[in-house]
Image (tube, rainbow, N blue to C red):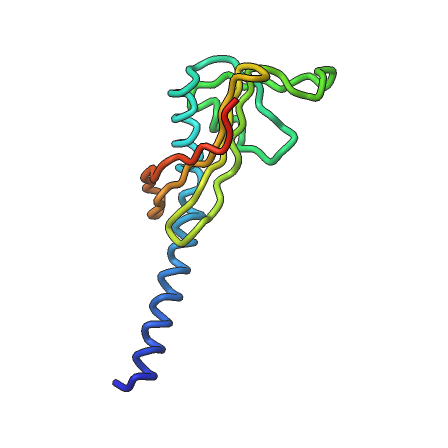
Length: 137
């Protein structure tokens, strides 16, 4: 096998593995979102919460399955913010076989935290790789 043909084989293998990695991420998004929702329940407890709706968010069914009773903030509320609120953004691909979920929770104007959790995703099997706190109030 020549150097050029070896390079082509390696390039094709890397491309195939990358494609499989992103396909694995897509098939694991629901499991990542469910795992992040379960972690939020562990942090703030099962209770009634408002879901922030001005950004794309995870379906309420994922949050309900984790133990939250999700309510919508009435339009009459000042700035459209009701407390306590939670937010769980849809999972996104970061790298092949690595996805992230952005999350946040607040009990009041100066009592909350949020960040991103990364997951190793292998076709529905997910492993928590850690949290990155972006804000704390």
